[in-house]
Length: 231
View 1 (cartoon, rainbow, N blue to C red):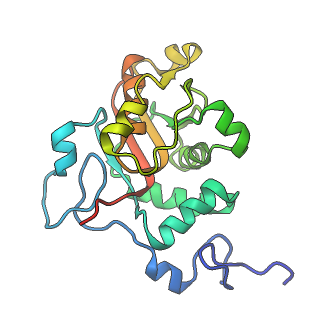
View 2 (cartoon, rainbow, N blue to C red):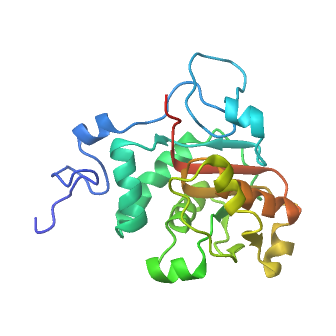
């Protein structure tokens, strides 16, 4: 009665904690139908086999499969920004449920869940890594091992907002590596990389390449929201 349940989207009254009201849920841009098997972006048409978008066909991806439950717009963008910059940790549980539900991956039981890392200066400033919160919640739901400090962003990169695809990839060159003390743990293990948003995929590619360098096995990626290309 003192703290009634509130919608995570608009703040209106709802029946249960940590959920959305009917209006916000209906406006949430879930990714449905045919998607690119590598980056999770929505594609037109239908298919009984794995298909790939033009970007993934042209550049390739250093991972096996990728998915996102949401498009990065509207309610989804509000939720991501609330989690990323607004200390809205109560969003994590719902987001992790969506992310697990969007994964078609048949992950082996020895897979390890890794979050995309923040540089230490940004981590101190923000006080938490939103990707690590999502990864931890997913690992718990999927009953997989969670190792939050395996990847290190040892070079502080500039903000990628507004940068071209090529500039994003160039900025991440040699910026992320596997912590030497974790190399033995990751060797020959499947990896699920977790982040909040995928735009070009440059950050996830840098993480995946670091895992390949550490001799990991199959690499999968999942994000809460996928930025769709402008029409």
